[in-house]
Length: 210
Image (cartoon, rainbow, N blue to C red; front, side, top):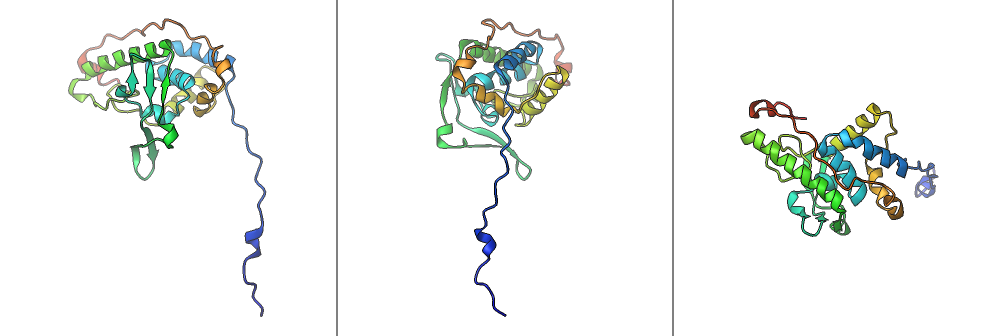
C-alpha cells in the first residue's frame, strides 16, 4: 500500500472566525460613571479615573508604588506590572514590553485625587498599627495588602449592576485616553472633596477590611 509523504491537511488554511468588536464606553457614559463614582470608595474611584486619564493597563496600575509618582511635576512612571497565574499566584513582573516602561504627565485634578488616596492610606496605616502590610503600593486594601489584579474588574462589574448601567471590560477604559479630543469633553471636578471618614477605634478598624 502506497503511503503519502506528508499530511495534506497542513496546507489547509482554516478561515478565521469573525472578530468580535470590543464594547467601549461612550463619552457620555464615562461622564455618568464619573458622577456615580462620587460616592464610591476612594481607592476604586481613583483607580477608574486614573485608568481613563492615563491609559495605563490594570496590571500596571496595580503594580504602581508611591515612589513612582513625581508630585512636583505631576508625572507617574510605569516600572513594573502586577500579574496573577493559577500556578504562581500573585506576583510582580517587568512591563509588557520595553516601550511599556514609560512616564506620563497627569492632570492636577487627578494628582489631587491621588494625594487624597495617600492621606487615606496613611490614616489606615495608623489605625492598623502592626497589622499594616507595608508594600508601598498605591492601590491596596485597608490593611495595606495590594489589590488583586482582578479585584477592580469585579468591583466595577458589581458597581455597574447596582447602578443599572452598562458594564464594559476594565481594559476598555484605557482606550478612552487614545481619543484625546473626546477625553477633553469629560468634566472632572476641579476640586474633589475628601470623603467622610468614619470615626472608629483602632481596635475595630482592622476588622473592616475589604
